[in-house]
Amino acid sequence: MDRDHTSAGHLQELRRGTVVLACLLQLRTPDYGYSLLTRLDALGFVTDANTLYPLLRRLETQGHLTSEWSTDEARPRKFYRTSRAGELLAADLVEDWKRLDASVTSLVRGDRS
Image (tube, rainbow, N blue to C red; front, side):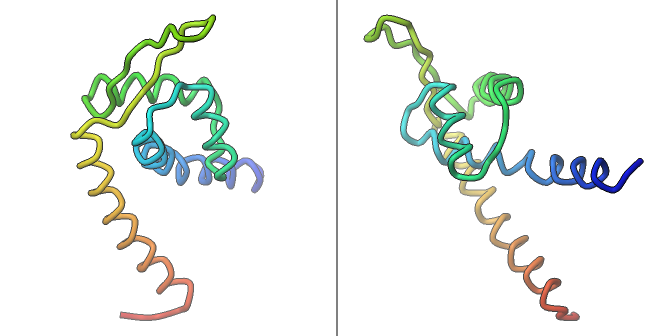
């Protein structure tokens, strides 16, 4: 296995959980899948539709997102919004992210406990 392939796998694992948090935070304002995909990409959370749409469905099934169809435009679109349970999960994930960030920053600096 070459180094680039191994690195890509580790980066994918690292990013997987951050996309969940990014979706929960971004969807505090209702949005539909393709628009969310574009916004996440612009923010540096590179993902593809084959990853995002199953994630949105899973978060909805778990109660972390709600959805409704909008027929205001020519093409109906399913809009997602972070639910109260999703807000609570996002708050927990943000707190954990802060702790992890501080720990990794400490390791990068070479701090020892």
